[in-house]
Image (cartoon, rainbow, N blue to C red; front, side, top):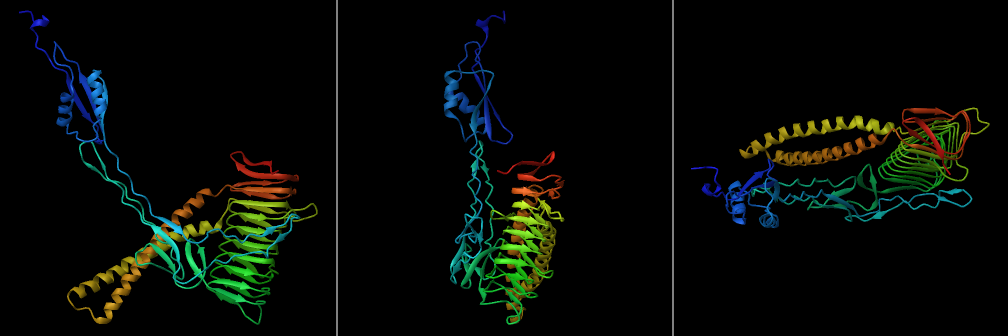
Length: 470
């Protein structure tokens, strides 16, 4: 018998082979053509192959029907795909008060600046909601092609930013005020601040002022006196040789002259008419008209507003930008030193956070050991009554410390992001930057040998470059 005679060979039906991806996300079909008059490919053949491979989910019926109508032999075709999971949404916070600080000086058409027309107070009542949280969601599971569950990534929780004089509601979703006063966001925490008002000057009649909330001074802060506030400071007069320290903003309607002994240090913004012989540390932004013979450090932007705003015989350091009309003068024998892209306070804070995190972690461990011991005594009915209250206090302390730890972790991420943005910035001069001015941006330094008008200085890979500021 001649085996090569087709009439003597058995018919072989079309074949369907299924390949399942390693991650069980996809299945591929490879068809083998029929031989010797065997049956063509059919839906039952493919369905049987899928069943044999364990594929039960995400089967593409339209693709299978199309391949039966028009087979493609020897080629892989995607015939099943998994349903991916839907990851959970992170918790979100909604602040129920304005985060925009509207206390901005009014610049008139003639270039003069009015620091008296300010409205900086946001009053709230006790038990009024300040911030609400939408909880994180767990997400929706997916299904792989074999019918298995694909777990979603749950959303991340976010603690309510509880600060002074606030409390969290029983359901854990709302932050409310403990007292009536002024609400503010101080170092990323919602804080309710009472206002301490001095009708006239801070002098011998009042002594130094040290208050946990906001301070308003109706007159001047005289030489040698201190105003320290846990919130904002608003001074309707001037500061001549006094010292101002604030966790929030400082606004001086007139100006500041340190007289060699006074200084200003604030974590928020500083706004004043002028700075003279000043020693100033500003956490965020500075707005003033002029700066003469001063040393100024600004975490954000330093803006010298007005048509004749100037820097003279001063050293100004800012984390982001510096803008002025004139820097220096033709007659000045003392050069100005201008630095941007530098923020020492952020670097110092970055170094302290790990220490605080370690301290919180150690406290939680030590308290947890005591709690475990007390609970063991409690199970044997050997815990004294006075220790029951101590046990409750210990648990509350651990919970509070855990919230502090979450806040530190969040702050650590914010600080890292801010540090990554350092090293760049710009200096904008809308009038003249006079020769002799030293400009440093990050690690690059440039000393001006000629006057520059209407110029913006920025840092590039080639060093400090200039462009028009018109």
